[in-house]
View (cartoon, helix red, strand yellow):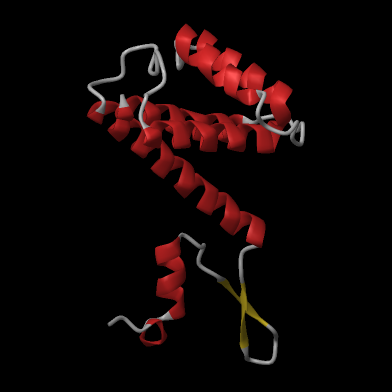
Length: 156
């Protein structure tokens, strides 16, 4: 079994993507460590998550027989597919509220991530959700949506 206490902390930080610390001499001969800010570390962590999500999306599209557009012409009829649809819509509504979620679905239709049937079916489900926060959706939210689309397409 691995024991983290047997590893050099700098090596563990490097493995997790944290920047190496810099040394700062206090003038008394003792070396102090200046670590990167949490925002720097979180930015690197977010980049790793994004890269993994995009890799997953492409692998799922390949498993579904390719990446023809629209990626998701209609929704899968399985119980797993329905659960995934509800999870995705819950995510969109939770972040952006119903109006922004509806706008996002229309955008996904325009860029050929969704077919007309899929957009209609997804929009019909939105009425069952509470209005939500109403915050604007960003690029990261759309990347997450692409991963949901790829997973749903793989289930068809």
